[in-house]
Length: 315
Image (cartoon, rainbow, N blue to C red):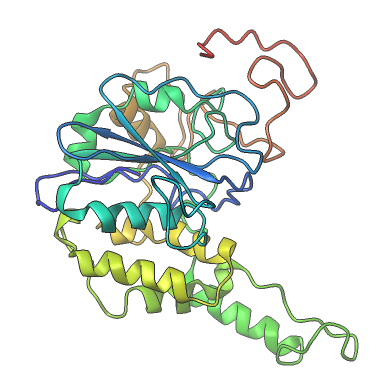
């Protein structure tokens, strides 16, 4: 995620696949990283899997970026959060709240793991998303998503009113939410779709989304974090609510799905007639993997243990 200072001209980028990622953040990272562009403050956020340093360690960010790593399960860490809840969103909001008066001109919020299934890259590699990032586009847009491919999320993964009606219907069919085992009935599983409408109304109670990201006052971000701290929703559900709300919080329409072709060109300079694209994807840029966990020894070896001929840097 990219975020700017509280001046209308500063830009903000949210890099955790907010709208487009209905993910599980399955690796359940314990670390968060953030990269900023100087001058002023810095922050890039991401998390690591439970076994903190398993797999390949990302190389240092490009020299122009400054990195801030949040550790969410250690209250004594130099950068931490008030409560380990809401997945990466607690880190994003804590950074904004704590550094609101001195935010960097441009900030990327990112997961800590370099290789992850949701990274919009043929190798699921986070490094190209930073090294190729076109800051002039970020500043012009004010907020961008670091995923151009529409799967998963666009254009209508979440339909608050219809989803709430469907959840009510399923609950009624299950006997009004009876406990599992009572007369053979089971309570329907709680999903992000089912609770999103109510959660969003709690997050943004009648407050119009501002035209400029940086004009949202500090009090709003404090309120968003307080909601995250106090909501009875679980860690995964509360985090996913935030995933589908970031783009609205930062001033975009409720359905914000730029065409994949324009997105790849504007965000990373991947342009040209050789980019065979549909509205939501460009050929050979991203393939949704069958599993959320990449194979051991990725990116050197593939799903069947085959040599992938990976030529990128690993240190």
